[in-house]
Length: 249
Picture 1 (cartoon, rainbow, N blue to C red):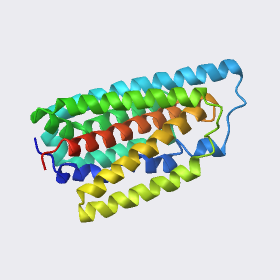
Picture 2: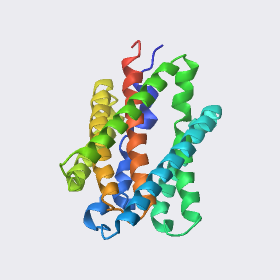
Picture 3: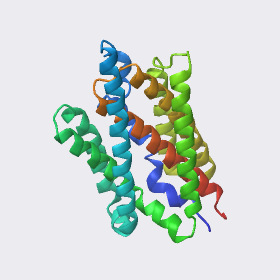
Protein backbone atom coordinates (compact mmCIF):
# COMPACT_ATOMS: atom_id res chain seq x y z
CA UNK A 1 0.00 0.00 0.00
CA UNK A 2 1.21 3.53 -0.75
CA UNK A 3 2.58 5.62 2.08
CA UNK A 4 3.89 8.93 0.76
CA UNK A 5 5.98 11.52 2.54
CA UNK A 6 2.91 13.55 3.55
CA UNK A 7 1.96 10.59 5.73
CA UNK A 8 4.71 11.59 8.13
CA UNK A 9 4.49 15.37 7.96
CA UNK A 10 3.22 15.71 11.53
CA UNK A 11 6.07 13.53 12.77
CA UNK A 12 8.83 15.35 10.89
CA UNK A 13 9.15 17.99 13.55
CA UNK A 14 9.25 15.30 16.24
CA UNK A 15 12.33 13.47 14.99
CA UNK A 16 14.74 14.49 17.67
CA UNK A 17 12.19 16.92 19.08
CA UNK A 18 12.08 15.14 22.40
CA UNK A 19 15.85 14.90 22.33
CA UNK A 20 16.02 18.67 22.10
CA UNK A 21 14.16 18.87 25.39
CA UNK A 22 16.74 16.59 26.99
CA UNK A 23 18.97 19.66 27.25
CA UNK A 24 16.18 21.88 28.50
CA UNK A 25 14.93 19.35 31.03
CA UNK A 26 18.35 18.22 32.22
CA UNK A 27 17.79 14.52 31.51
CA UNK A 28 20.89 13.93 29.49
CA UNK A 29 23.67 16.42 29.14
CA UNK A 30 23.55 17.45 32.77
CA UNK A 31 24.87 14.01 33.63
CA UNK A 32 28.15 15.04 32.11
CA UNK A 33 28.35 18.23 34.12
CA UNK A 34 27.56 16.98 37.62
CA UNK A 35 28.59 13.60 38.89
CA UNK A 36 26.73 11.66 41.55
CA UNK A 37 29.33 8.88 41.50
CA UNK A 38 29.94 9.31 45.25
CA UNK A 39 27.19 6.72 45.77
CA UNK A 40 28.25 3.58 47.57
CA UNK A 41 28.29 0.36 45.58
CA UNK A 42 25.02 -0.75 47.17
CA UNK A 43 23.38 2.60 46.46
CA UNK A 44 24.59 2.47 42.85
CA UNK A 45 23.11 -1.00 42.33
CA UNK A 46 19.80 0.20 43.76
CA UNK A 47 19.96 3.31 41.56
CA UNK A 48 20.50 1.22 38.40
CA UNK A 49 17.71 -1.21 39.29
CA UNK A 50 15.28 1.62 40.05
CA UNK A 51 16.18 3.35 36.78
CA UNK A 52 15.42 0.32 34.66
CA UNK A 53 12.26 -0.46 36.61
CA UNK A 54 10.99 3.04 35.89
CA UNK A 55 12.04 2.71 32.25
CA UNK A 56 10.12 -0.55 31.93
CA UNK A 57 7.05 0.94 33.62
CA UNK A 58 7.28 3.98 31.37
CA UNK A 59 7.45 1.73 28.31
CA UNK A 60 4.33 -0.06 29.53
CA UNK A 61 2.49 3.25 29.98
CA UNK A 62 3.62 4.33 26.51
CA UNK A 63 2.36 1.06 25.03
CA UNK A 64 -1.01 1.54 26.69
CA UNK A 65 -1.09 5.09 25.35
CA UNK A 66 -0.38 3.85 21.81
CA UNK A 67 -3.15 1.25 22.12
CA UNK A 68 -5.61 3.91 23.27
CA UNK A 69 -4.36 6.26 20.55
CA UNK A 70 -5.10 3.70 17.85
CA UNK A 71 -8.69 3.47 19.06
CA UNK A 72 -9.15 7.24 19.01
CA UNK A 73 -6.84 7.99 16.08
CA UNK A 74 -9.19 10.52 14.46
CA UNK A 75 -9.45 12.56 17.66
CA UNK A 76 -5.70 12.47 18.30
CA UNK A 77 -5.00 13.50 14.71
CA UNK A 78 -7.47 16.39 14.96
CA UNK A 79 -5.92 17.72 18.16
CA UNK A 80 -2.40 16.49 17.45
CA UNK A 81 -0.58 19.69 18.31
CA UNK A 82 -2.50 20.04 21.57
CA UNK A 83 -1.41 16.55 22.59
CA UNK A 84 2.13 17.28 21.43
CA UNK A 85 2.33 20.48 23.49
CA UNK A 86 0.97 18.58 26.51
CA UNK A 87 3.63 15.95 25.95
CA UNK A 88 6.43 18.53 25.93
CA UNK A 89 5.03 20.28 29.02
CA UNK A 90 4.91 16.98 30.91
CA UNK A 91 8.48 16.20 29.84
CA UNK A 92 9.71 19.55 31.11
CA UNK A 93 7.56 19.22 34.22
CA UNK A 94 9.24 15.97 35.23
CA UNK A 95 12.44 17.88 35.95
CA UNK A 96 10.67 20.13 38.47
CA UNK A 97 8.78 17.40 40.35
CA UNK A 98 11.27 14.52 40.19
CA UNK A 99 11.83 14.66 43.95
CA UNK A 100 8.13 14.91 44.83
CA UNK A 101 6.50 11.52 45.35
CA UNK A 102 4.07 10.39 44.03
CA UNK A 103 3.66 13.42 41.74
CA UNK A 104 6.91 12.58 39.94
CA UNK A 105 5.60 9.17 38.92
CA UNK A 106 2.24 10.59 37.85
CA UNK A 107 3.94 13.12 35.57
CA UNK A 108 6.42 10.53 34.28
CA UNK A 109 3.75 8.03 33.30
CA UNK A 110 1.54 10.85 32.03
CA UNK A 111 4.34 11.85 29.68
CA UNK A 112 5.04 8.35 28.38
CA UNK A 113 1.32 7.63 28.01
CA UNK A 114 0.82 10.85 26.03
CA UNK A 115 3.83 10.15 23.81
CA UNK A 116 2.35 6.75 22.99
CA UNK A 117 -1.03 8.37 22.40
CA UNK A 118 0.42 10.67 19.71
CA UNK A 119 1.68 7.62 17.81
CA UNK A 120 -1.89 6.37 17.51
CA UNK A 121 -2.78 7.96 14.14
CA UNK A 122 0.33 6.61 12.39
CA UNK A 123 -0.07 3.15 13.87
CA UNK A 124 -3.77 3.17 12.98
CA UNK A 125 -2.98 3.98 9.34
CA UNK A 126 -0.48 1.14 9.11
CA UNK A 127 -2.97 -1.25 10.65
CA UNK A 128 -5.79 0.00 8.43
CA UNK A 129 -3.69 -0.64 5.31
CA UNK A 130 -2.67 -4.10 6.48
CA UNK A 131 0.92 -3.07 7.17
CA UNK A 132 1.15 -4.31 10.74
CA UNK A 133 4.37 -6.08 9.79
CA UNK A 134 6.09 -2.71 9.47
CA UNK A 135 5.17 -1.83 13.04
CA UNK A 136 6.36 -5.21 14.29
CA UNK A 137 9.62 -4.97 12.33
CA UNK A 138 10.31 -1.44 13.56
CA UNK A 139 9.70 -2.47 17.18
CA UNK A 140 11.81 -5.61 16.83
CA UNK A 141 14.67 -3.68 15.24
CA UNK A 142 14.48 -1.01 17.95
CA UNK A 143 14.54 -3.62 20.70
CA UNK A 144 17.50 -5.46 19.18
CA UNK A 145 19.49 -2.27 18.60
CA UNK A 146 18.67 -0.96 22.07
CA UNK A 147 19.64 -4.22 23.74
CA UNK A 148 22.83 -4.70 21.73
CA UNK A 149 24.06 -1.16 22.30
CA UNK A 150 23.20 -1.29 25.99
CA UNK A 151 25.27 -4.45 26.32
CA UNK A 152 28.08 -2.82 24.35
CA UNK A 153 28.01 0.22 26.63
CA UNK A 154 28.29 -2.00 29.70
CA UNK A 155 31.06 -4.22 28.36
CA UNK A 156 33.25 -1.78 26.43
CA UNK A 157 36.34 -0.26 28.04
CA UNK A 158 35.79 2.97 26.11
CA UNK A 159 34.21 5.87 27.96
CA UNK A 160 31.43 7.63 26.03
CA UNK A 161 30.17 9.79 28.89
CA UNK A 162 32.00 12.85 27.54
CA UNK A 163 30.01 12.81 24.27
CA UNK A 164 27.21 15.04 25.52
CA UNK A 165 28.17 18.24 23.72
CA UNK A 166 28.96 16.63 20.32
CA UNK A 167 25.69 14.70 20.50
CA UNK A 168 23.79 17.87 21.30
CA UNK A 169 25.34 19.67 18.32
CA UNK A 170 24.41 16.74 16.06
CA UNK A 171 20.89 16.86 17.47
CA UNK A 172 20.55 20.55 16.62
CA UNK A 173 21.69 19.83 13.05
CA UNK A 174 19.06 17.08 12.72
CA UNK A 175 16.34 19.35 14.08
CA UNK A 176 17.27 22.12 11.64
CA UNK A 177 17.25 19.61 8.78
CA UNK A 178 13.81 18.39 9.87
CA UNK A 179 12.44 21.93 9.93
CA UNK A 180 13.83 22.62 6.46
CA UNK A 181 12.27 19.42 5.13
CA UNK A 182 8.91 20.38 6.61
CA UNK A 183 9.04 23.26 4.13
CA UNK A 184 10.42 21.52 1.02
CA UNK A 185 8.86 18.10 1.66
CA UNK A 186 11.57 15.95 0.09
CA UNK A 187 11.04 12.18 0.60
CA UNK A 188 14.75 11.52 -0.03
CA UNK A 189 15.85 14.14 2.50
CA UNK A 190 13.28 12.74 4.92
CA UNK A 191 14.86 9.27 4.70
CA UNK A 192 18.34 10.77 5.14
CA UNK A 193 17.23 12.70 8.22
CA UNK A 194 15.56 9.65 9.75
CA UNK A 195 18.71 7.64 9.07
CA UNK A 196 20.66 10.32 10.93
CA UNK A 197 18.17 10.10 13.80
CA UNK A 198 18.75 6.34 13.99
CA UNK A 199 22.52 6.84 14.16
CA UNK A 200 22.25 9.73 16.63
CA UNK A 201 20.01 7.96 19.11
CA UNK A 202 22.08 4.82 18.82
CA UNK A 203 24.95 6.88 20.23
CA UNK A 204 22.60 8.31 22.84
CA UNK A 205 21.79 4.79 24.03
CA UNK A 206 25.47 4.13 24.69
CA UNK A 207 25.95 7.56 26.25
CA UNK A 208 22.93 7.27 28.55
CA UNK A 209 23.62 3.67 29.54
CA UNK A 210 27.15 4.47 30.62
CA UNK A 211 26.00 7.50 32.58
CA UNK A 212 23.42 5.33 34.33
CA UNK A 213 25.80 2.54 35.28
CA UNK A 214 28.28 5.13 36.56
CA UNK A 215 25.58 6.81 38.63
CA UNK A 216 25.92 10.15 36.86
CA UNK A 217 22.23 11.03 37.00
CA UNK A 218 20.71 12.73 39.99
CA UNK A 219 17.67 10.45 40.21
CA UNK A 220 16.49 7.20 38.61
CA UNK A 221 13.74 9.20 36.90
CA UNK A 222 16.36 11.22 35.01
CA UNK A 223 17.96 8.06 33.66
CA UNK A 224 14.64 6.38 32.89
CA UNK A 225 13.40 9.36 30.88
CA UNK A 226 16.69 9.52 28.93
CA UNK A 227 16.39 5.83 28.01
CA UNK A 228 12.72 6.23 27.08
CA UNK A 229 13.54 9.15 24.77
CA UNK A 230 16.26 7.06 23.12
CA UNK A 231 13.93 4.12 22.52
CA UNK A 232 10.99 6.25 21.41
CA UNK A 233 12.95 8.36 18.92
CA UNK A 234 14.75 5.33 17.52
CA UNK A 235 11.46 3.46 17.07
CA UNK A 236 9.76 6.46 15.46
CA UNK A 237 12.62 6.96 12.99
CA UNK A 238 12.75 3.29 12.02
CA UNK A 239 8.97 3.23 11.63
CA UNK A 240 9.13 6.14 9.21
CA UNK A 241 12.01 4.66 7.22
CA UNK A 242 10.31 1.29 6.87
CA UNK A 243 7.03 3.02 6.02
CA UNK A 244 8.55 5.00 3.17
CA UNK A 245 10.65 2.11 1.89
CA UNK A 246 7.53 -0.06 1.90
CA UNK A 247 5.59 2.53 -0.09
CA UNK A 248 4.42 1.91 -3.64
CA UNK A 249 5.28 5.51 -4.56
